[in-house]
Length: 336
Image 1 (cartoon, rainbow, N blue to C red):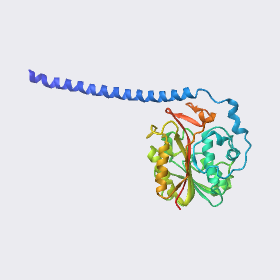
Image 2 (image 1 turned 90 degrees about the vertical axis):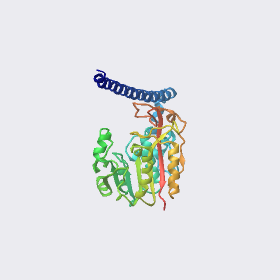
Image 3 (image 1 turned 120 degrees about the vertical axis):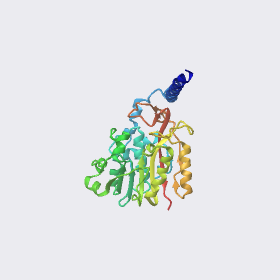
Image 4 (image 1 turned 60 degrees about the horizontal axis):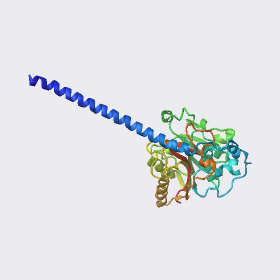
């Protein structure tokens, strides 16, 4: 009789063990999710409490009131963080006019201005210069550079990858050459002569992309999967350049912490120490990195932290999963 009961009892005990393991695993998963959400909300509440009010509405009109002036030399001798002061300069208004947008306190405008100005003052925007854009989406830079006579290859990820990542829904992906066309910036004949399009995985840059005078990306390499992959991309982008060529890239700068950050996420946040590590790595190989200026600014637009859902302006500093982040421009010259 005992022998007959043994097998059912063993099965019952094993069933209870399996059930307990399942319950414990499910509970642990729920607790981990709750803890993660709590950490995010705690960080965001701290940001909100520190930055409860929008800047004065009249102050938001300042960039649009600045008369456009000619670009200046030596505006960006350094790799720099986005700051309010740049939006209130005639050269900034000039470049916004050239790409057909109303100047406003928005960091995407600063990224475009940073890349354009950095290349202009390094004499790269001239006939015969060859440029390579990474993750260009529908940005206006390819058309502008073509207008100046540069031969441009604009690249973006494959349509299937962009669709799964959500970029096609946000209309930020370029699937073909037509996505780069801007007749208001560059006439169709000049555009057709100077611009081509190619699919490119930024984690595996095509070997045929080489011999360029300059390359650029505007807030793209923070989406490559991790901090290390983003830093690798910057180094790998130099292989596309001629000796002495220029790489100008903008990305995310974590203003909240030099230790804790977002990594292995859809969007990662680079810390000061990540850029410093990259600079050392590149300089050891003979490349020149423009000195790193992490000054975040202390004016009203610098201090306002935009939380989701984000404003159209001002939006210089964003709260992303509880971290304050802004744009950072990196300038690297390939070893001669």
